[in-house]
Image (tube, rainbow over the protein chains, first blue to last red):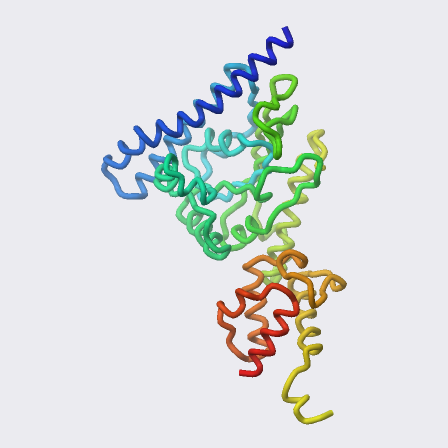
Length: 262
Length: 89
């Protein structure tokens, strides 16, 4: 029975990954042309595209829960759904973090890899959604992110820059702090946990856990960058202090729930 | 002290000034600052820091640094050389 369940989950995980690619292609082939033909300027188009991606990711997450690969536990997810003009920061334990988060966010902006931005299949969708390409200089990237926040976007950033390396201490890059200090918008911390760990860094999709994984998403109270550091610091120091403060904040949240910070 | 020493700064003087900036503004551990140290890989600076550093060096030398000139800079010794080139202009 156990073995059967394992095989079922392996099969369904493979199917989920295929569905994800097919879904992306479907959006490019069907939703994208329709949205392009609909009335309204680029801003409306961007919102509609973000909504379509949100719905598509919702179907994907729903599928994974229904077939029994994962179980989703949400806490205060409404704060994510209503997020506007907010810098959403999350730790990054798995490959599906952004998918789960956007499935809860009708409007979201994110930074995507240049490879995705230029992809012949998905590039059009990603660009129409107004997502931000990381193929810019750091200054331009921070500026684009601040701009998106000022326009009322809910910008999702993983301050680690890549998935968490299991067994290593949480380490944040300074980009998120640069963005947070570049505007006065609040920070919304999202703490993600996955037990047993799966789809983590350096682990192929077929290396599935011994049982269905419990995925927990917990939206914490908003933070203000200015409250986390001393006032009147020069920029170079403010960015470093804020990065350290955010790192500690997340490490403590993760440790508080029985999952060691490292 | 010879007159030209007052006009020109020695490499050591520039290195010390740079070290002070790195420690005070970028919280770089002092013992890691060697001429060979790579600003980005060893000293954990990012490209936004590099812009800040260039601005600070401009204040120090009173000369404008062009963005292109600073792009090729990788190590602490490169910065010292760039500052010397700036002062020689």
